[in-house]
Image (spheres, rainbow over the protein chains, first blue to last red):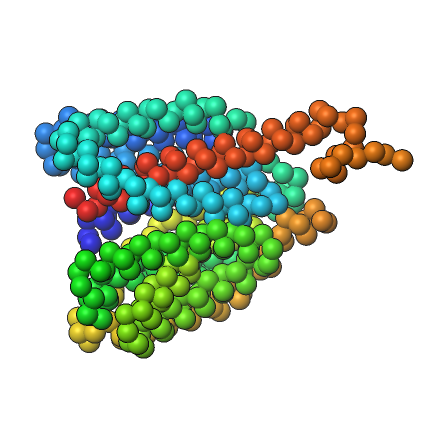
Length: 353
Length: 51
């Protein structure tokens, strides 16, 4: 758990300092730089002869690729291009991480088995380079929409440090970090929870599949809803969905109920990812989204301690039921932060449609 | 009285309709490339944690 946490913090620190460039440079340049960093990192890993060198790549070059060709770049891009269906667009691009989580492990495992790990990394480097012409063609000059101008005019004048003085910045961080924390804590403990319910080890894979299917739906649903209702309400709906699922898990009603609970939890957890970006875009304007997400990253990344905290509670009680209750309490604690956020003007309201 | 086609577009403004279609195609292209690049970069990143 410690090594992934260190890598996640390397990402967060890079995002903190370089997030503003997602707003400054054209999307085409950002993504091409990200894909070049990805290919470079895969190539350097393939020729490296020491573990220390690989760790260095993961601390420096890989975070740059994750920043410029990962979720932050994708969310910033679509936020600046889409207006009326921005939420749905953010939810839709979020599916990319889920697809990657399903497809790439199979591809990488196959490539490592058949070609060896050095050639497998070189194949991945080539895949990154192949995407560059497609990115060049797909990502033309971004044109922002008029309805964003009002909220942006105010934020555009503010220096980065002024965001730290805004209460809505901290409220958004507290609310989303709480939800992320619970999401990560449960996601990385799904297999042990299922085993506590006397699932066979091979059956635990099915719980993860159901959770992933729920996440697909959750991402699109959260995006769809936040285009039509106040995103704060959508956030509360996501939290309520997660609480309901955790409560179902804690009741220990049998295998089928646990499977349903994992599916429902996936829907809620899937919604957490886009809703944070939707809230930040609504509060600070899409033109500042990269900068604000970057400034928030070191704080939001506290979520990576969620699995460690869950393990700590389990060690005390030797059962997942108290862990689930603690997670419910954390979600309930985020409610006042969401309620205190200012109302976000929807695109339809801004354009008077 | 203006005549409109089946899409509600005023007849005699084909350029406007074409521009609207090209915006949709461009938006679809942006979503597609964002999904694929994330699938590659994040998929590999997450998988590396399991090694």
